[in-house]
Image 1 (tube, rainbow, N blue to C red):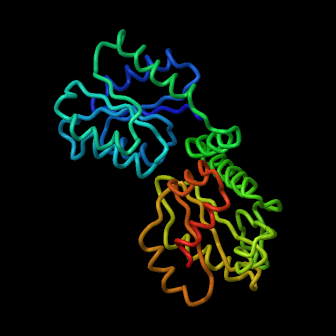
Image 2: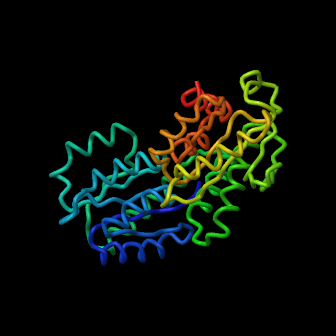
Image 3: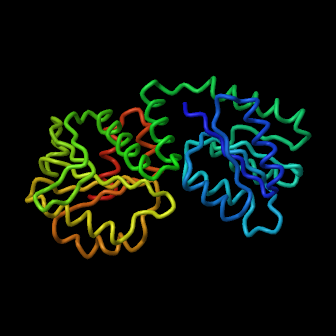
Length: 298
């Protein structure tokens, strides 16, 4: 399992001190923190983390810890949350809602670091030790986390493409080409040969064209759609399905443009962080991929 931890606290000094202390106690974990409102929301969306430590009370902000947890459950549904507060009794009824959803790993009262850090470290170590992910899931999770968290823009795209190749291979697709140029000299991130012995995929042509966008802060735009849709449309019938993998969000203008282009018989599938994490963790990745296609294309 990828051992990445995100600390969220409206007090920058407390967040930094906890981060520094946990880095010493958990030397095999990658740990970062966010304390400013904008930075909190950005890191929730743009980073990969397997555990989030969330302070409930955020004085002077337009959001609180419950808003943060809601966003975490959308952006990274397989992350587990350690709820933190010095005023736990005020929130216990609302906390129970999140416990019932399976999102909460533990509840922890704030205290001095000398006592608190060993308690948090034990909770986190126990969780990582008990994790039962298969070896294949761990590899895919690591590839995704490393690609999403990579600061170097040049490496970021390549690493994400390698991760997506791993997903398709896990689904049973064998022949995958990267950075291919079509007849019009357009570069296509991945071309997956549609040679599964599965009638479900037969209607989509000989190939699946795949676009990989590792830009968590920007998302997938209308212009991105227009460019990619043109690439798929120029395949001379070799591909009727384009697949977009993005670590960001899909902008509303994309769906509006897709409706205008829908009569041309080309379908574009969109997989964001939520769909990607479902694929990684599902017992049958190919069946989950089909379900996503059914939901968006049927």
